[in-house]
Image (tube, rainbow, N blue to C red):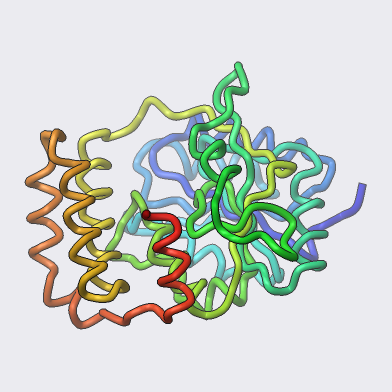
Length: 287
């Protein structure tokens, strides 16, 4: 099996999930492809640091002093030198052969910034609903190895490092939850493609350590921020009503909305409307 460590690195994001991280690292280190692995620890206070240092000395550990959410992936990307970076979280791992296939596609399609894998959930290998939705993307797919997307799953993706860096990576203020959406639009504005490739497979055993209400609040807030920061005024207004209408039944609806409103000056300062061709794609997905 080809040694891919000169072409691709794996960045694993973790926070206080040492048991899940151990399983992920065992799975990743068992891959015959032998990718270089970097764990970015978001200020865990469990046994994460000791676990990696003691049981996985071949893995590079980056320990952060505070939990900065998805932006921790930016640090991982900055620390590696390979042209491609695969992401997974502490509760996901890549299937054998997928990373080699991803490299082949990236090398063959220099206009692709992100490849999104098919996600299989739990021991039953049930296909994630988001993967099914991606497979039926209505966006044009000419000269691409799979359905074109305007979104991706951060923990099941391979990115072109330079494109990721030039687009700014993940916005720290978004923390975690829908953090891919802004990056997606900025990559598209820079002329890059995002593609779903079902031949790439990631396994996901969802952690039970999840703050469901906190995540829902952040998802509402971040979706509003993306609309306000990147869409033309009327489309942003339409999307705002759509987001609020779909979230209205949630008991964290108000918290998400007012959290978004409190940062309005920051949002306005960061506002940069997308080019017409990206707006066209966005409208196709939000008819």
